[in-house]
Length: 280
Image (tube, rainbow, N blue to C red):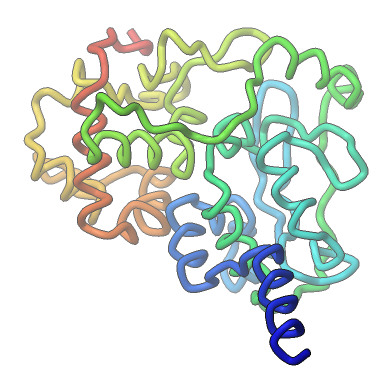
């Protein structure tokens, strides 16, 4: 009888979902830049409690509170709710998220990494700070329109490594395309706000110098070591310093990557097609 009971417990344990690794989830949160988007840009702001403003042609979006507070944060979410948010761009009630939340990139995060991220977020100190509502132009307040946008421009699904590509390039592609979501800032968009996939990482026009081209067309003058140093400490080969926005990305994200992951990112960027700078 005891043997049957042990066998039954072993069977059900095998069916139970595996628990995520919060320590690894902390590393993934840094690789994903979660802190920057979900922490207000002011001295003493509570990490992950929301309030960061993102100005766009459609209005101002505010990063929400993602601490495990049951009312103000995501404390009442299930792991399935979390996976659905990142994989499908949907809230727990089924409504569509605006793609200012970069689920078009996060959809590619693999299941094991989503599980570890969830485990880490569950251990954050809860904050009662309420998420600030977005301030959008009237036309873009209709979330139902997002269903059409997603039908046109969004393809959900986890990253799949290419068998013919070396492992270091697959790892770099995953970090850049999924976790790092570099294309969200460095890829130009059409008038509906969707990235131009044929111009992936070719830079974006804007104030001052815009957002730089990350393809070999621009990076050819930098050695691998110089590029890795820039991602690690923000210094360019000529002694300049990364601007405020990229400086924060370097401080919170790329400088936190393991050396092997930095090497993978550099190798992948080197492998991209040479695209003319979009800013010209």
